[in-house]
Image 1 (cartoon, rainbow, N blue to C red):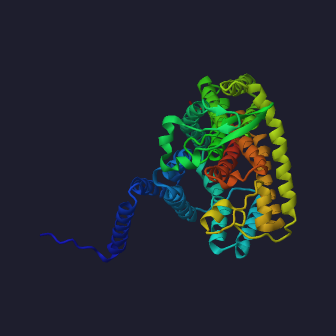
Image 2 (image 1 turned 45 degrees about the vertical axis):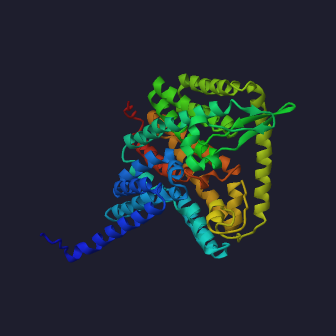
Image 3 (image 1 turned 180 degrees about the vertical axis):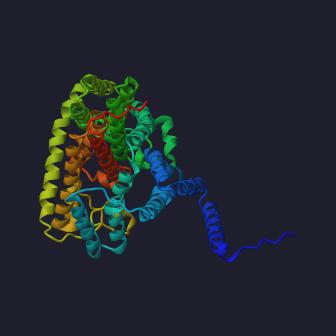
Length: 479
């Protein structure tokens, strides 16, 4: 009989593998649905140990951020970070140690501003309601900022950026089509002043999480009655998460369309735009046409004005399914005015906090929920939230950092070749739109925008640098 013998150097990995197997078996025995999640996590972690593949894994997983939660409940919330982000960061750090170039992209004043903001976040952990709340708050604020460096180094050629946009747009069609189907099913049951929400066969997508995504709609006053628009989450845990993902996917689709000029890519972008509108978030009725208009203007694609007409026509057609499209659209300005008034009031009140805030995580929903705090605060204005948690110094630092990054992107956009400008313009505009809408809600705290925001800024900084180096020579259009 052959005896199994291990060399001394083989014992640590063998024991680690044994512990992982025992832990996995114990977890599956207690909670069987976690089994598929563990298998997926292991496969993604192995993939992400080569950081470029980890970025591609992120691009594949982000459009379906809610699915692990629907399968395994709250443990699914950690899948992306444990299985992809942490191995990606580790392998990227090891890769950078072997190189002599700077890890961070050229960012000008944004770099010291981000560093100051990070110092303020860490310093305010001492004032947090608890150490756990402070730790989770720190994660929400800072954990994905390194994606700036990852995105910058990922884009070595224009094809890398364009491939990322293509993957995002094509994968985004799946959540968009699910959302449109959910919207059509749920819209059969609007009632005056009451909302009965039902996603038909799609309710099985959410498993036990259905109760958390099911019972709400957007109520809009129309004359003497209330018109209710369903909010749909698609493959996410909330309609807001789907909305912010939809904006990114729509920008990626528009990037492909404006660069190539192909009608099938315009059709893809139009479907993604309608998917965003179907989310039920009222910002979509303003942001989607605004992104199309600004992108077309920056890209110089005159025929693409048809894209704007398609989006607006689709918006009216979708709303017309419930019988009062023009009236509903007419209610949007009043809601926008009320939202801006609320946001301005929150920022003005937060400014009274002074140089020192209440502590990291003090108004971060996930930190309060999972940090064991009994408080349930919610400030919609993300900038007011920054002031409340990190004081006026923290607010000034993050505003300078974000504003400086956008300034660099749009300044570079004006100096690149035409093909690069057409590909980059929609993404630059979408990120700027999300930054402005932070006055309405802290969407930068949410999956998957918390990753996309910093990753795409890094990608754009590299892609626009390459476009500038081409010196006006049009790059090859990829099919």
